[in-house]
Length: 412
Image 1 (cartoon, rainbow, N blue to C red):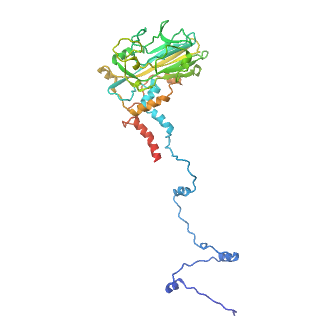
Image 2: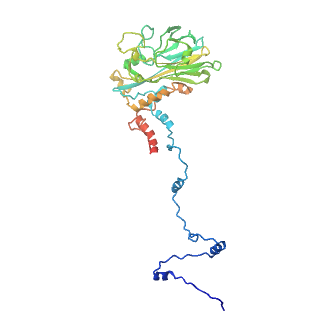
């Protein structure tokens, strides 16, 4: 028997609700364990505690970037990832390797057959002069040699010298560091103010009377023994007329001069470089000094006297210095028969000339170099204006655009 009363409360089903016009509600499942636990602690379950959990779809891999953006620290200015191997500091270094003229200025010995790529309205030819000589240290422990003028010139007035003119000079064997005198040594007689011509200049004057310097340098190699390996070499250059008599300290303090110890066992080089566009002009065979009557109406001021050379001091008497003087010329032919030598139109590249004009300002005018760099044979430049732009015909402008294009794309 049952005592008490039992009341049952029936809830309409969803089908009954629909018949009665009541909207249906989704049935909820109740976990008895959670209900018992809730009653024991007098807490209410959250409304979504019994909801079925559905795993969200996995975001794409690139969504991680956007998920991190809200928590990323503030930026410290703009930064762009440079293309691989395209550092801005190396752009000019790579462009220099694409310039035949600049490479010829840096290494004239291996830079023959190069022309200055400015506007020239005639066909031109090229030639290289390599003059070897030796300088011996005198009894006063000094020796020296210099190119007094790399241009092919006529004999100065009042100076006993060859009719071909003067290109280089040596220091008098009778003077020391306190009074340096430059001139020519005829046997045992020293002719102050005299000099020597480059061999072959007489033949050059027969084929042309207008030329200009593309590149030039003086290489020095000391031949000191282990017991006489002492002293120093001062390399100097001057784009203007040199003094007739100076002391050794004057050359040490010359602008952009370099001092190389003899015991470093290295060769040395001092280079010519254009300081102004006047150095690019074609020159006739003019005299370097004096007022000798010639067919040339141009003044001496239009014919720059470039001095570049070396002075050795503190060396053992009898020490020999081997010298190589190299000048690369571009000339205008004098006769039609010169076409056999390959006269051709001079290249035009305004971008290259502008860049070279800026590069030579911080170029090492004089420096120590390995012995192999001064002992190699003369050679034509492997880089030419025909193959430095991958055949596009745009010259150095193409190489500049090629270097700057990745930078421009990085900024977009």
